[in-house]
Length: 62
Image (cartoon, rainbow, N blue to C red; front, side, top):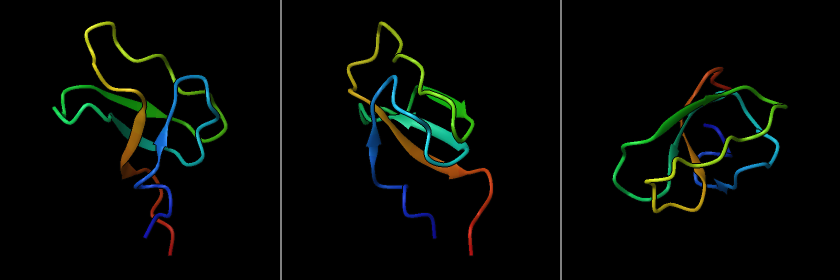
């Protein structure tokens, strides 16, 4: 299980694990595919969320 799945990461922070991230607004409408070591992008203008939460890990860790 990935330990980063419940954490909210804010735009500009370093991506801790590659995967598909979902905005935390609760509507499930904004996604970003991010690569470990890169920075999180800004949220879209129409999003009421405050950050990104891991939805699907690119490389499941055992």
